[in-house]
Every structure is written in structure tokens, then in C-alpha cells.
Image (cartoon, rainbow, N blue to C red; front, side, top):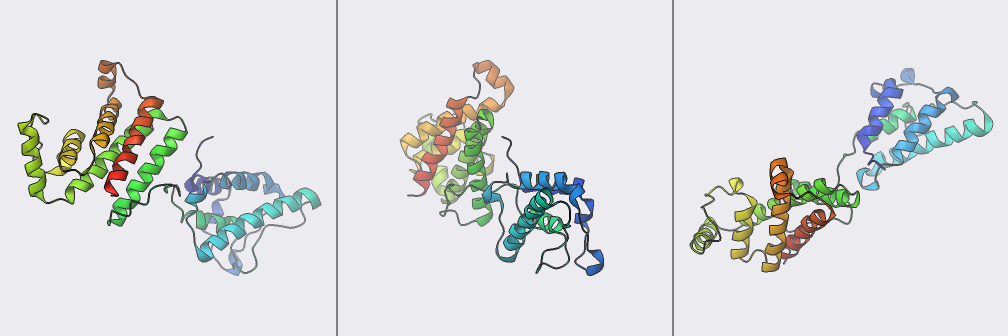
Amino acid sequence: MPRVVPSQVVTLIDKLFPFTSTQEDTPLARTTLDHNYSNSLAAIVELADQIPPELIALEGENYTAYVSSLAAIRTTIITWQTRGGVQPLSTIQGFGNLNPVTLLRRNLKLCPDEFPALSTATLSFISDADLRDNLRIDISTSNQALSNGEWKASTVLAGATVEALLLWALKQRPPTDTTNAVKTLLSNQTLNANPGADLEKWTLHPLIEVAKELNIIQSSTATQVRLAKDFRNLIHPGKAIRLGQICDRGTALSAVAAIEHVLRDLSR
């Protein structure tokens, strides 16, 4: 089943009931809907019910309004089906003059289309709230893609997340630490070339090896992440053809496992 997000429901509401995008909360702007709109309202409720709970990021009055608007629409449809179209859908007592469909739309507009699943690691070791939230969304999305059998999406996104985590970790260390680690890795030929002073321009390979050299990640983690590095490169069609490899459940599992290994080490 396709993943339904709040913006999809808003788009449907705008298509079926255009007035909801501009309705004002005044007595003169009150709008009623009768039983002829039953099928359209049922479609909205059906789609809204498929939104994952974690995307309904509402609190207080907004959440109350969201639940009340859905309940009002659902109850009215049932009434029309059992008693005939005698009761129009107009307003909800205590929520002003807005039609429940407008109220539903307004609150869905406040909800994100992406949000990490509740089971996603908190990443409390990262103080930057924006970075932490973005990484949590990426981790959640890569796991969701794995569950949905979207092997390439899961593989590539997990690899990119590992890269972002290692980049963050190296940035927490003094520049002299990374410089000395690079020198060591060049001398033992683990690295073939100096990646430069700008960590932002590093590829995943030096990020892995320097992180291991500095004991940011364990040897077992480095081994797992190297697999993720190789699989992530399969996003490039030419490389995939040359290697004769494709993204599959195995590559996705390996890449997602790499995230877990890195998170374990960074949380120590």
C-alpha cells in the first residue's frame, strides 16, 4: 500500500472542496454540505485514516480540532446513510464558523510529510537540533524503504546517512587529530591520496578510515561501513553495470546495519 502523507489529503480536499482554502471564520462565511457530497467526504476520511500516526504532529487545540473534524465528517456520513440527508455538515460546536472539512484541512497543513518513526534512535549525542531531526528522518525513511522492499532507496539513503554521521563525528575532533590520522593512513597506504583539509569534500572512504584510526568507530563497524560504501556506489548506473551488481535485500540490510553499528559506537 502506498504511503499516504498529509499533503496528499490537503490536495484532495482542495480538489473536491476549493472553498476550504479561503473560508474565513465568520458567520457570513459559513458553508454547509449536504448528502450529495457523501462520496467525496468518505474519500477524504478514508485517505486521512491512512496517514501514519507519527505524521499527525499536532498538539493541544490543533489536535483536538483535527480529531473533532474527522469525527464530525464521519458521523455525518453515517447519519446520511441511516436516516437520510436531513442533517447538513456545517460547523462543530465550540470551533467557530468553519466547516469541519476546512478545519481538517487547516490542521493537516500543519503536519509534516516526513517524520521519524517512534522507534528511531534519538541521536541525543548530536546537539544541533536541525541536523539531528534530519538524520532521524533519513534513518526512519531508510528503514521504511527496507520494510517496503525498496532496496535501492534503502541502500543509498542508509549509505548517505552513515556518511553524514561520520562527517559529524570527525568535525567534533580537533583538526590536528584528523591531519595526523591522515598522515598515518597515507604512510601505511590505507589512503592513496590526501583528501584535503575540508571534511565536507571528503568521500566516504577517508571518512571511514580516519574515523577508525581515531577510534571513533570500531574495527567491526568499519568493516560493515565499507560494505555500505561499496553498495552505495551502485546508485551510479555505470558502476553497477561494471560490477555486475544491483541493489537487493542484501545490500539494503547491509547498509541499514552499518547505520546501527555507527550509532552504537557514537553513543558510547
